[in-house]
Image (cartoon, rainbow, N blue to C red; front, top):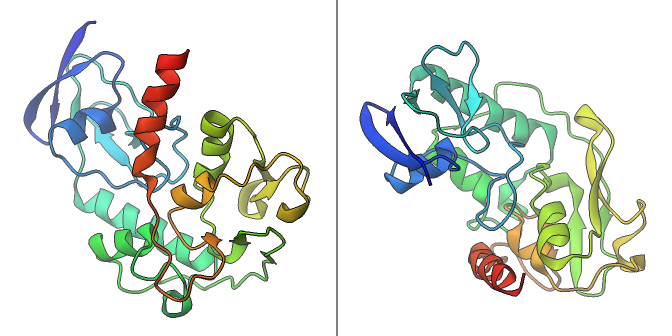
Length: 235
């Protein structure tokens, strides 16, 4: 395996040629925010929080899907990036109905934690306040589309780990939303195995287990790397 040398935030870094900028940075203890990325799942660059500056490239690049290259000079933190990331978070809050005080994931929400870490203390754009449905047709789980941020973690874990492909994305742009099967109620799904993996990887309170009160929905996404290793041994 070829080793690449590059510079991240002024620090000399070595990385394998198949690694992404995000992986190389994390191995050096350099924080780059992300909400859609989760170890054990494929990379899609959906949330756009991990954009970084690369010398010689005019546009910002998503660190989670950009492979390292020899001699790269990468900047992961700047006033421009901080401003951009806060704006992305504001859009996520404004496009949905994220009322933390009454959410079951309050205190255990990655979107909430990321907003606090990046210093987002208010939203400068108008709230869209969409009227999205809550699907409580499943016997064990509930899907609240009001809190979905379209990270597609549920889609990927259902397809890549469980192999059921119950979840998918429908629509385009701001009209995009995740659906079960062919836009059928979750409880009517003929493919869902009720494994709960989608609930565990959801970064917000969009997918929850029934019977949870405010602040009680604690997720455990750390099981994914283990599943990935076990799947690799079986293949």
